[in-house]
Image (cartoon, rainbow, N blue to C red; front, side, top):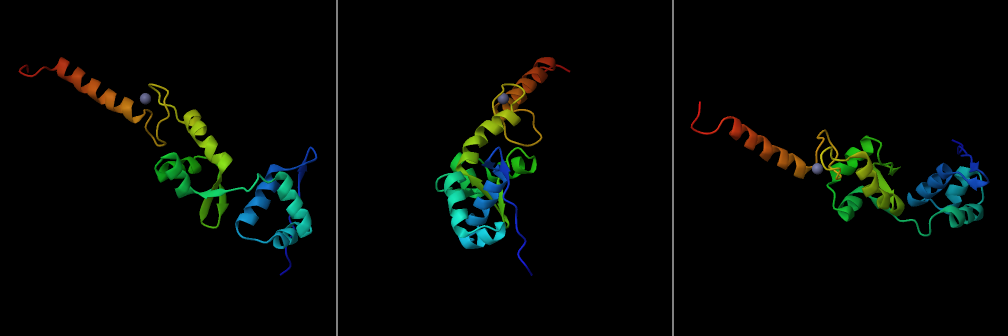
Length: 155
Ligand SMILES: [Zn+2]
């Protein structure tokens, strides 16, 4: 089978982000410059130049587990955020990889997409509308109100 050539796209005379991402992804999968070059129909030297120019210096792609550990989030948060399209890591086989830039953005993305309705603090992804603290607080308040409405010894 002949290799399908991928187009190198440019936006405003700059390599398009999609192409940059593709280059980086293929390299991170362990493809050689020559193999990536064949994919794009360019020489390995050209690919090296493009990566040097557009690729972040020594792009480190972190697996999801590492990212959640680094950020101190449970892994399912990232899984959930990914499903919801809040974060867009790079797919590599069955793994999800995050650039350092993406990792840096995650807390802000979570804060933006998932504010607690009560206090505005970031809350875990999921169906709850409140952060853990506010849920706890609300529960206590509800119990108090119940006790006030129906004090022990009455009824
Ligand atoms: Zn809250």
